Image (cartoon, rainbow, N blue to C red):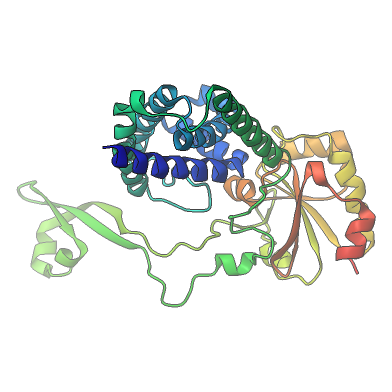
Length: 379
């Protein structure tokens, strides 16, 4: 049994550390996923807690993984692991069974898992955590008492620093389809011969004489003759997707005027000029303090041959209020909120694209001065 417990500790500890670090690398992205879960469960009141909870889970997973490997605070760690895995097993089962959340966010954008894959992963983890829990009183720490405290404190402080750093700047490792060096046009393309969505279409007809209802799928309906159609009248038609086709990494991305009348996607993504995109997915939730700096930078960029526009999912009225209050001189365009949240983990954040390729991006805390931009991107 000692061998089983040891193997379980290594497997669970390493997996928790990897999972926690991937989420800590992008705590804002994980908070979006938590907010999605809150919406699904009808607890929208908890959405403001998504970010602090995201950071806490990131730190807790890494620390729990370290403690599991070292045997530090074994009883507390075992209870924590068991409590967490039971909760998340229920959560992923509910999500999979009712098809509520298509990606659990367990490994951020690094590894995408379907709902049932997420549930299966939690079942496997539960199997490995069980022997750790059952033999928690026999697990010995590899350190003395003082070493246990040092391990706990150092792992907590280091993971907390890393999580806060990634939130205040940008992810150290970017796994998103909008990462630096990625081409947005290519990310939206569907390869030739890629699998298409498959649908089951069910038709409902009623017998004109008896009133009997008959339901048929497309293949059955095409075999009916004119006599049958003369005796039945159409009632309803339902379409159900039975197989998901290929979905490109970037979808539902379009840049339109705030009133929706003009699509400028190609003008931006197929332009040889450097396009600086100020991303503010929701102006009511954005940090407005850096806007003066963005505004001054935008004018210098435009004067030196670049382009500068704002992207938001907010309404025309809200955007105009922000523009007038901050004397913003550049135009705003509308983009889907989910796409904006995915593009850059900052609100606001600045992205530079040229011919659709992401050249660079900056958190508002790391905005470069104009001379740096001019020397590197406006030559």
